Image (tube, rainbow, N blue to C red; front, side, top):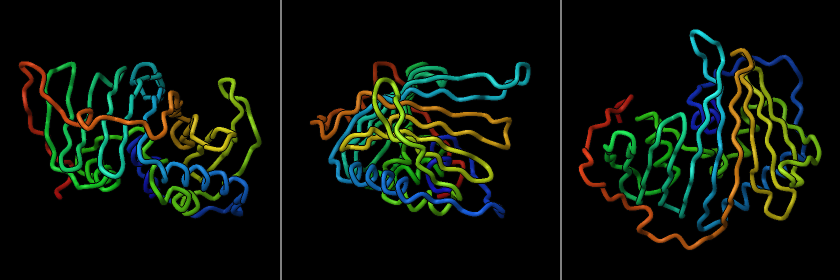
Length: 244
């Protein structure tokens, strides 16, 4: 199972089976991915916007699109805040290094979860036990390149392409179950700009996400990561999918 890209962005577990095609790994593609991972790994803080479109299977109409937007704020090694608006509902998430809070703007209720003391462990734990997804978490894992090499047979550089007016590096990774196209800025930072996941065994269902408004090492006040219940908000319990 790939540790990040499908687990946190879509909740899908990939069962890897034998792959008859010869592996094709492009060293240029690996170098670009490594460069991106190094830059992100050295950041103290960042923020970005992620606009996402996902195909879902409707029993009456087949595949239809759902869209939403996430505003994400991160401070290493132990703070996160995000707000989600769109077809998934309107929600907020706060993590201050020792607890996480998820809040529904639509229902005005919140749940508090004890959490590990670093971002990566928090994402792993809360996703596994509660099914909460974290937008683009894959790209922030220090093992991102190794995870791709371990789980995809094809990793190729497709050249430089224009994306939303910017020159980007275009990379394709693929295995028997899925293919992922990724675009990274063609500048010194090599930041993720967009990715598209196609599920080959699910009517080519797609998940597409586009980054914008990248801010690198911004000063983000600590209060951003502290949740204050709005008036009349109810605290509710959130039951784990799996025992700790």
